[in-house]
Length: 580
Ligand SMILES: [Zn+2]
Image: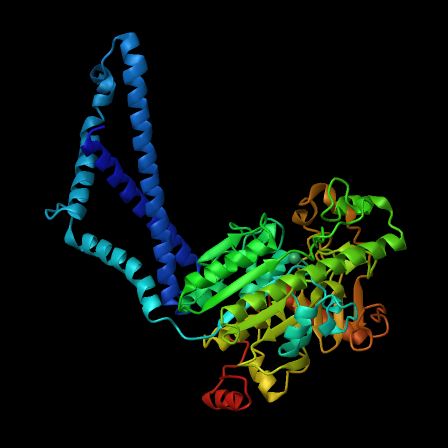
């Protein structure tokens, strides 16, 4: 193929990719609120990402075209032309194609002159677009270099999520089973939240809330195939905006790349097929690669999610075809005895112990690298797990506390004191809290409340309201918690998305009929065994009104739901040992 043609195709690929990337980047920018929040750096990163991807794709398409042309030419020369005694020249410009020659040669001419303008001194291209192109390329190279030379200041933040981990199986939450020595040791010098809640009873809506500080109906990742939209500003994006290295390593299929949870992560590694040892290796490698930049890392484990992988052999009765975990489809057909259920609870416990080992390994790695004191470690789960507390098994299906109550430890010995916190908090609150620790203001357009000022004042707001939603199966139940009163509204409609997702799995979650409203006094009845809705109609009415307001989006998204710290408050926090 003549060199001129190759150059033309490459130039066309570059220009096409640049145009495609620009369209993509502008579409992405206009759908996000980053600009309106003044996140100019993040907008720039998004623009560069879109352009880079577009250019790469355009060039890749051009290379494929060139390679395909070479193959066609080769085959023609070696196989077709000799057989038919034809010359390539004779079919090169059949009369029918001649009409295209004019426009084609003009495009070719423009592209070739663009190539010359980039590679050589003489240029047929206007100078301004060319200069902008060079500035763009220079900044793309310069920004990461500048970040390395002058990295932002702030602690590392490591968010560890153990899928479906119940707090009551951990020693630091009162278990005597001895399953969690590493977590318990960490808890001894952590902030430990006794009453932390997720927003939803399964992964996608819950992690969506954790990452955006919005409720599921607000961030939009509600059902199985939903995507977290680019318009939300995720925790990773906010950290990246500050110049943090952002690392995501996760093992849950419904968070795989493409579902939108990768937003803001420089590296978002899908480890659904990797071992926990591999996850740790990847984490360490990425931390090394961050160099002098502080990092925000999110690592999501699956041991305590069915099939409860602990590395130990499980009774073959529960695991046809596999000895590494229980098979949930089989369980539901077995007609389990109480003994069987205890055995399965035992496997869950072993999975908790297995996760505890992995958590210990993370802390050991931080210690060995000498960054334990500079790293805020958060341990939580995305939701709990039902082990027949209300007659069912697994998660996704109800809004009882065995599915919403989560462990929450924040370990930062050099920054935060070790303390027990008994106020209700929700995953949504981690967003402003963690950003605040890194000196980033993340209070705009979120639901959460930074609990650091409340901690230092030793006064949490009373009667704060928390909402819960996002079931995968059955009717769209919702719940509200205020003080110790929790109202569950069982009257939601059943979305077609809710039923058809897992096909044959769905019928095995019976989600039995419940009364329209359930009211629990969590102070007196933390396991939600006595529905007192009938004896407290006034409380039901009041909470139902607030819940309806939430569902009708009457609240809107508040612009600032947590207080900002004044300088005096910050000084006070420092004197109390909350900040260094
Ligand atoms: Zn989960």
